[in-house]
Length: 344
Image (cartoon, rainbow, N blue to C red; front, side, top):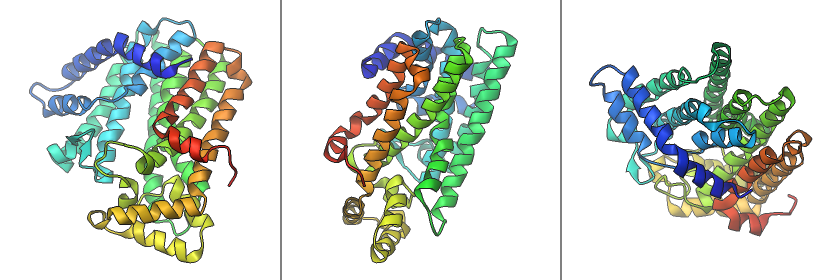
């Protein structure tokens, strides 16, 4: 399955309806004249692939269910994802998103907190628009609430990891299985349940979503150095002092002097981090095998998803999930070709 083409088709056919429902719900649930409406619209106008909205709709199609019935769920997943982005931009100090000032930069830090908080509640309001029976709506809300708390816990753990004297790949994975994988488990598992998939298929989707979430985050870590994230500078994660998969692996495998130097680079105030600092970190990641390890971990997890018997029993669903993994790699395909297939 050409998932990139399917995502684009689905977006062309259905995003307008999802966007309309989001706009109607935000306006209906916000007090008259609320700045929240303006800020929410501004943030959503930054665009993007709308992945979290399209995934539930494509999942419904793959399970031969009516995607129209899942539009409110798709809208809720997109809203939830964007709520985390508003807070992430503030917490990470990112001044731009896809070339536009972020909410905290356009208004203020306090207003970004307010908008992100409100968007979590808009998510619940959108779930209330589902046409399913009350029991299914409640079960879906339970899934979303529990998943959201896992995402927030993952974010909290990420900040703990920055202060950890011995960050490891295992600790890194624990962070992203909440922070990032949660935002794939919610749309995939929720859609499978709402589409009436058998319990065994739902369990297979949940396992695959966890692996795909890790793949997506590792790809995102690599994209920061070897691609374009639209955050205003190459090596933004290094300037932020973030413990990426590259940092976690490097600190555990490079020489003590190199580890000390990497810590010095990460500890620099963001405004003082230079392009030369980023290049130095990049060279270190390559020399100690961190970049190769990251690519090999992506390949390992993609093989697990591709070979999962519970997914292979539903060919269209299997094609969607394996295709998503391939689509995630497109922005870093040259690096995967360069470093893939090797063992660290």
